[in-house]
Image (tube, rainbow, N blue to C red; front, side, top):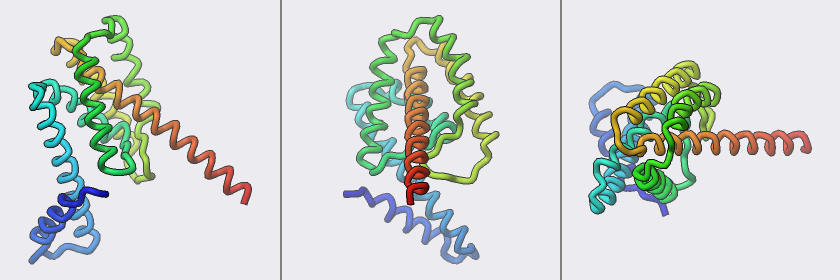
Length: 196
């Protein structure tokens, strides 16, 4: 069972946008896809925000979401197999960021090491994708490094809790998971192609 209301809304919006305009078929597809992506992320964020609002964790939800919002597009484009799993993973990621981050269990020395280590890891692995897409790898790597350093320094000096740090760590963990999964799938595909 897939959630489709936002796709219908995106298509109606796209119809309104492209009506009486001279767009090519490719441009029209991009507009439709862009609206689907925007509305998909928007409704998921609103749903997650409302859940945390009910528990009076609005500020914490925004802080945790910053790490995901900033890094995920450049470091790791991890996508779940269906929307319910996507919502669950997003909800779990933000919940873990909030509850573990509020505990402040990561010592300052490890925090400083992570400020140095995570950008290096990001430089090495970015961009990790579930699908092959044409993109500027150098730009993705540079933005990953820059945003990671900026967010970790912001977290270290500005916030009392480690919510943003834990959120960033989870994005990196998901990126490493996706990288290992991609390597494993590529190895299986290469082995099966050789055996055929």
